Amino acid sequence: MFITERNAQGTWSKPQSVSDNINTIHEEGSATLSADFNTMYFSRCMVSKRGKQGCQLYMAKRAEQGWLMPEAINVAHDSVIVAHPSLSDDGLTLYFVSDMVGGYGGLDIWKLTRASASDNFGEPVNLGPSINTSANEMFPFAHPDGSLYFASNGHPGMGGLDLFKAMPAGSEWSVENMRYPMNSPSDDFGIVFERDREAGYFSSRRAKGRGGDDIYMFYLPPLIFNMTGKITDDKTHQPIAGATVKLVGSDGVVLTTTTADDGTYKFNLRPNADYVVIASKKGYLNNKGKNTTKGEGQSKDFGQNIALTSTAKPITIPNIFYDYDRWELRPESQSALDMLVDILNDNPNITIELGAHTDSRGSEEYNYDLSQRRAQSVVNYLIQKGIVPERLRAKGYAQTQPKVVDAEMAARYPFLTVGTTLTPGFVESLGDEQHKEVVYQINRRTEFRVLRDDFRMD
Image 1 (tube, rainbow, N blue to C red):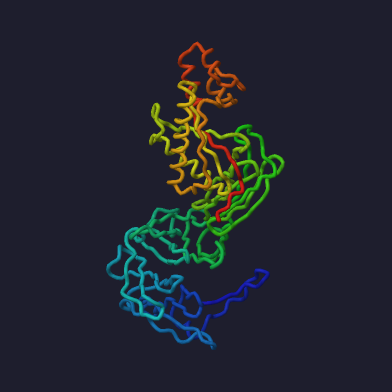
Image 2: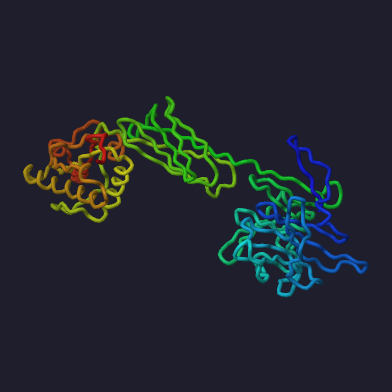
């Protein structure tokens, strides 16, 4: 075994022997180091005039004077191949390759485990058929993230030995080919990673090398994720300039920006994180969106437009249903009211009035009582969901505030005109009974309006 070091300019030094205590007349190789770099495990294959006589694992400690004399790790009979060790980051699992009895054919990947770094390793365990085949699996590398890399000519590949990545999947492993450019039609094997970035080295016999097995370096460019979007008014669809946009990530990142004149904003995201983006502006309800970079293997731009609702006018809560002449909420109203709970939780500083409206049928006195009870039933539901009563006020309006047709309503019901007030007189002017029922239904509504935006819990 030899060692070479790279200087700040990226130039590698002339290779030198690791240690006279490590290197012998036999064949040494495939070293793996503990996380503190003070313990080395490696392979030694015995060679004599009769040829190779099997391989064994050795362990060496490093002291001030260098590497001490190694000790053999007795895993199997010395005529068996036991080689290519790779130590897990916590030092508790040692992967290796062997053709010992109990495998699936050729060379298999096995492991030794222990309870602590001061304990001896236990009995060897084969990694099973999801990793091992009837051909050869060799050169395991235990990545600090828990994945296992190895070379195989038994799994489907591009030819010869290919590099594979395996992830734990319950009691088995999920294996995938690393594909081109890591693999080629020739042998590709012996992958190792640097600790702090997606870069490393592997060996290959691919074409255009210098001959035999060459060492190659690889580097995975960092993933780049951007989030861009526009903040708009949910009714006018016009951009909102000067809105505050806050990004909160599961990785602890918290960023804040302000929208430009055209309502746009932009954030840079990190890999493998969940994000919530919250938009706010004085005179509007807060709103939010969610995105995640988890599972993304390629750079990506995320779009996250957010519409804010103005508090200048009452806001209708759709799909609030009551039985005829009753004030108890029907079960299908729950979804809409749960959305209102979310709004109140996202806007913890507002207090609101819940206003219930009836159509023009029935006496005003009776409808006042009915609408007040309906408004109170909504307030009671919100209190049950954890909203403090001090933020809520119930108000019944009977039929005294008929709805005014807006653009959205006119688009949905072509017989209505923007700006029309749906008074009893207008209803009577409609010749179609179905149209009348539509107007009655529009007027029978539950709305909320923001009373204050400075609520504080004592």
